Amino acid sequence: MDSMGETDSQAVFLNVSFDRSYERLFVAQISILVSLGRIPRCVLEIPEEGQGRLHRILGLLQQCPVSIHDLSRVGLPARFS
Image 1 (cartoon, rainbow, N blue to C red):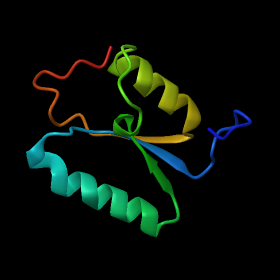
Image 2: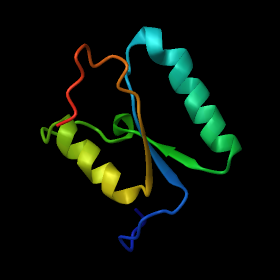
Image 3: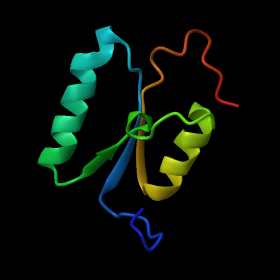
């Protein structure tokens, strides 16, 4: 969101794992998005100031018209409700 509070039409929110073993996939996703002229966004760009990760995720989701969610590390069975 810019200073006027508008959604950036090129922004794509990435909701993925941030552990070391996922790093190559994360970098690949960012590279692909940038090559397509998109602006990758993720919760890592917002410093933790006591508001919690979910609050930061929801804030970014509101700014991005598109999001990518990798739920492969959620565990089984994945719960979507």
